[in-house]
Image (cartoon, rainbow, N blue to C red; front, side):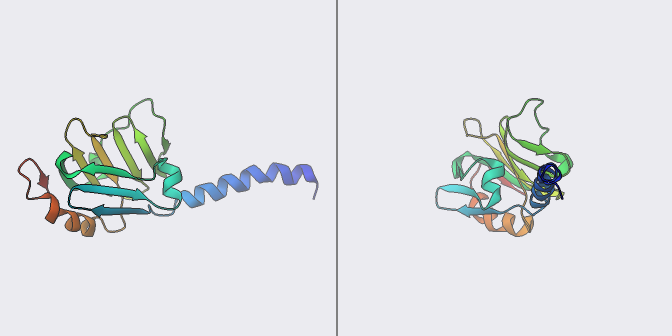
Length: 147
């Protein structure tokens, strides 16, 4: 095989590998402390989202719910984050932080004005278990709804 053919094949192989890696489910760790909700992208999700961590004060969280992708906020026309339709949406898109792949059931966290992000749209392997874990901490606050 000629070196020109090998060199021509390298970008194709790299692109195919990158697309295959993007199909891997999200890898997020969500922790609820006494005062904050901490989302830490793990592995390649740190690369896709360009973030090591998003920390929200519990007082800044107004609601958390599971919703189909159709109810997620629309993406702004201009964005500086990763979006390949049907494959991956990750990073800060305007005032919304995303880390989701193809899944339809997304965890949507709404924040009060003044928070770093107005909305976080996250995909977890089991969004219902994640919601249940956070619901007990978030629900008692009067301005917040956990559904």
